[in-house]
Amino acid sequence: MRETPTLRIPLGVLGLFAALIAYGVLIARYLAPVIGGWHPLLQTPIYVVLGVVWLLPLKRFLIWMETGRWG
Image (cartoon, rainbow, N blue to C red; front, side, top):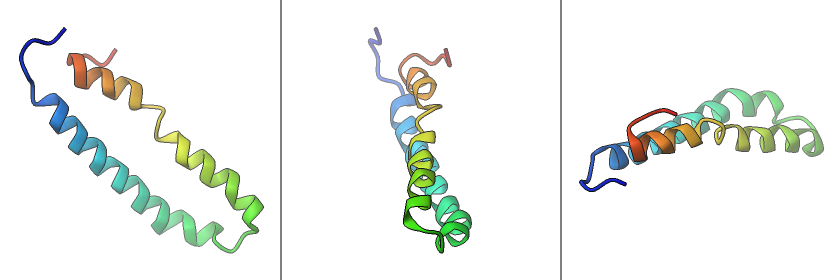
């Protein structure tokens, strides 16, 4: 258990926020024009997957924020 505060948590939150903004901008800029004209039932699974895929590295990132280790 951590006894002294570290900068990892606030920097990690800011980094996560910046990464999510960049991810969203990239999706909106490059993928939305490509699939924007498709039928909504074809778009839905793609956006669901893209909405969940950013969660994959989140566990290790949160572990790093708490412990300073990636695993």
